[in-house]
Length: 393
Image 1 (cartoon, rainbow, N blue to C red):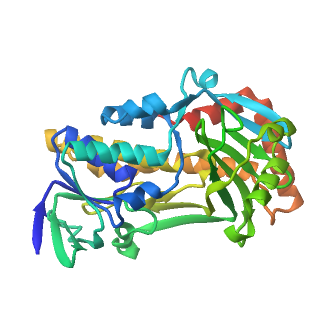
Image 2: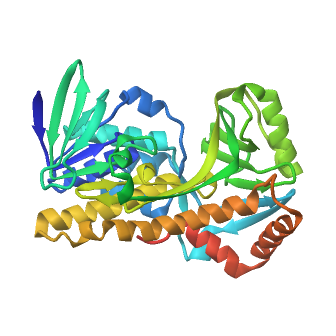
Image 3: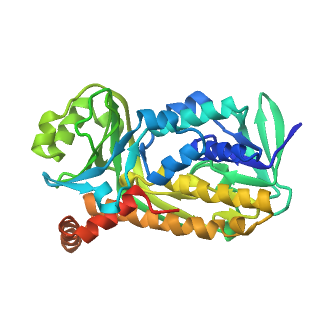
């Protein structure tokens, strides 16, 4: 068995794990990243692309903001359509200057991989059967299998950034954590197409037929979604059927200018809200989807993961530079305060804009009234805007 010694062992080579590794490296703190899949597989995953102000600032601090700033698109607002009537939310004006950036998660991950490679970072792909050990001791370690051999990573701390289905959270005894979950009775059918986006800003569309979202990755790559029943299958939806349904849920002028084309990716994602408390067990720290999942309606999944990394990064700097463990000790409590606020916002956006097949008439009226109040109240629009651009760390 070969043994690697490092300060921080990171499970998961997605954007969260890579960002933490890069930030720590710039401060002279060694880490090893273990990723179950190949680099090509990780970069093939299609994910969100709306980045909060705080996330983009963290990317720049990590020295990986150059391409993002060059190719990403700053968005000053979003559009909410209520049964064909459009309302623009002026994010920049309502927050005193804050904005969001549209830059695909795949591109974020690619930039981080390139940065780790340039600095000689230790990122091990195709690491099978990763297992954390001795989490409640001062000498935790990881084991993994690769090329038919077992390897070991000795470290001070382990960070579980390996997603909802990863091994990290499952390594915590069931009586030491509490899980909160809400499963929504629908999913999002999404397609990616090499077409010009229908609008310069995102459009969130509520209609009697169900929710729809018009998003983008670039000026030649569009991402669209429609709400579908949980039992629908991708095979049920031809491209033609998707485009027809999307048009039926959008304002007439938007539908009229929608450019259609063959889908280059098509998938259905179920919607759920999930939080695990606490986010620390011994010297294991959970981050991102390993600890919490949000519906994509509020664009908070990747951004919530980035806020976890912000708190962990600063806590580890204080520990290694000053011997101050207070940030690590309070990590879970601090991170969860922001996590639950992101959960609240995502739940609220989801509840307000989707059709719920099991809602009684009273609930439907409340939903309609909520949206009507929000669209007519500047105070309510400010609340949406400050949450959408991202609450401060």
